[in-house]
Image (cartoon, rainbow, N blue to C red; front, side):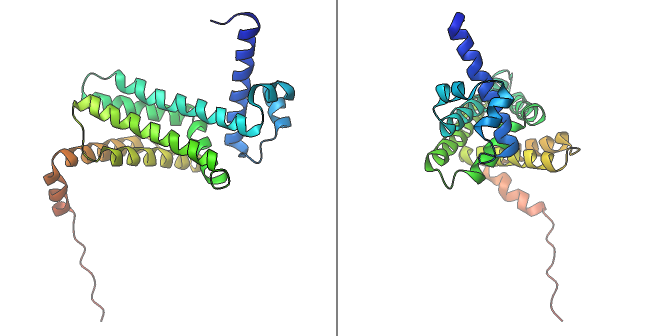
Length: 219
């Protein structure tokens, strides 16, 4: 562990990153000024510029930190599993804990995608890399749990990430929304997607049990 001035410098950097992540998630990129960040973190502006150069450099560091926490959380949860079903349950439990305990991580990524990505190609590239890494972590978890490559596993990963983002938005709009119900349905969807890719006949037979509503004829 670093000691003396090095340890102090690391702690200062972490305090800045923590405060910046919270402010970016609450106020967006444009609405977060360095003065407000210095006030929130209790760190002088000169130290912020020393560690990150400018506001864009700070944003890049915040994104990398948020992505690493997000992806590591998914990976570690799945590694604790004893069987494929447990791997899915552990991964979903890790995702749910993140929505419940640290929703600002995904909220931050969503906000920045909408606010900054179109104007700043380098940020768009960083965001795309984050979601690529997250998807590959999910795909790798599926492969490791089953011991085989699942055809179309990228699509499964995309659906899981999309549902996860939807849960964050839904919880933001309705704090009383049941995460339990959402993640139970997410589990059902993922199980079916994986099973139907391993046995395509399942997908074909599923269409047979969906009631077909007759189209009313015009009089």
